[in-house]
Structure formats: C-alpha cells, structure tokens
Image 1 (cartoon, rainbow, N blue to C red):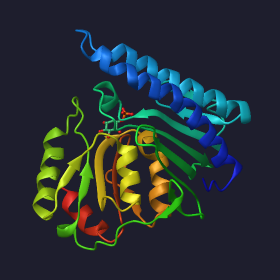
Image 2 (image 1 turned 30 degrees about the vertical axis):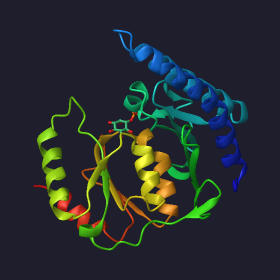
Image 3 (image 1 turned 180 degrees about the vertical axis):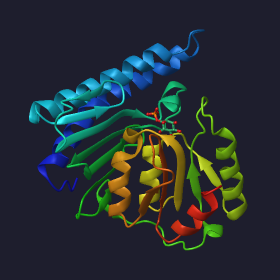
Image 4 (image 1 turned 45 degrees about the horizontal axis):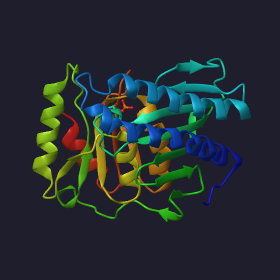
Length: 260
Ligand code: LIP
C-alpha cells in the first residue's frame, strides 16, 4: 500500500483494526434478519463499536486533535486546526439489510481544509485514499476520473431522498431531469462515500445527492479532487447538497439539477 505520510498510515491502521470487528458483525446480520425485531439495535451497536476503535487509535496518536464522528458527535471541539471526520459505517441501511455495500470513511482536516481521506469497503476489500497534492489511489494503483464529456453518455449515481425530507418533490424532479438527460442510467447504491470513490475511480461519471451529512462525504471530497474530479454544493446551508463529477460534465449536470 502506497501510503504517503504518517497521517495516512495512522488512518489506515485505525481503519483496518475497526474493519475486523465490522466484518465479524456483518457476518451476524443474516442470522438476525429472520428475527421479528430485525437487526436494528445490533447495527447501532456495530456502528458504535467501529467508531470506538477508530477514535481510540486516532486519539492515542494525537490526544488533542478534534473529532467529528457520526455517532458520538464532537470531541476536542476547540481544536479547529486539526480534526478527524469519521463515518464508521457509511451505508448503514445496506449493512442493516445484509447488503455488502458500505464503507468506513475517515478524513483529516487542517484549518478546515480537507487534507487527506480514506474510504474502505471491507467486504470487497477495496480501499480508496488520497492526500492533498499526492494523487488518489485505489488499492495500489493511481486512479483518475473518467473522460466522458457529455451528460448524455454518462453514468450517474445518486441517493435519497431521505424519508423525512420536506424537499422530496424537488429531489424526485431532479431525478427525472437527470434521467431524461442521459442515455446511460442513474444508479442508487446507498453509500455516499463509495459513490464519491467510484466517481474518482472512473466507475461513475458523476454523483449528486441532497441533504447529506459532512461525514458522509468529507473523505470522498479529497479523493475525488486528487483524481481530477470536481466537487461543489447546491444551496450550501446547513445540509450538504453535493454535486461531484469527473469535472468535464460538471456544468451540464449542475444546470440540470438547479430548479427554481
Ligand atoms: C447514508 C449515505 C447514503 C445516503 C443516506 C445516508 P449513513 O449515510 O451514505 O448514501 O443516501 O441518506 O446519509 O447514515 O449510512 O452513514
């Protein structure tokens, strides 16, 4: 593994340690699926377990660094210069249903700028990582975004809308507009982190999703940028509405997505 710095090594070590228990937990899901209550409580526990292992490893190395993580929230929140952003299981609903498509996502920020990111799909054993200025990698190989330059030829991935979204109508409208603009198709795989990684690796040409959380995409942002992609946000307020592409179809996709 071509890890470029001590920070990346640390993220990798924490992620690998946590993934061992996560893989074991995923193995239990099938058994729980048949119970009437389903595995929801078990999944919450797995999420927390994974998070705890990652946080322990990171804090051991840098006790004063800030942390923003999906389950626990903030740690050392006064430290604005160095911060980890963690999503212990991105794609929780897939995990909950025994679908092997989810990932651990860890990003590192300095003075609010994302410097490095690592996304690991423990079931497919696929790791995507990048550090500012050093390129993006998939397992041991350098990755680049696709070269498609027309939306009509592009394969786009999306997610949502969330069950409770007040903007469902608009999100469905966007879906129809993008669908009408591409001869290829739209996919929904249920993990924002992996969607961003797949655009970085050229598997998809573009991704958009509304109402995400920062931890869903933080690592993906640097991986995609370092692979030559472009990321920006529609209506950047509290929620994160992300458009992430190979950069060549960016303006075209964005124009289709903006609805007055
Ligand atoms: C999920 C995302 C997914 C999105 C969900 C949710 P979680 O993250 O990755 O793509 O559609 O709304 O945010 O909750 O599994 O970490």
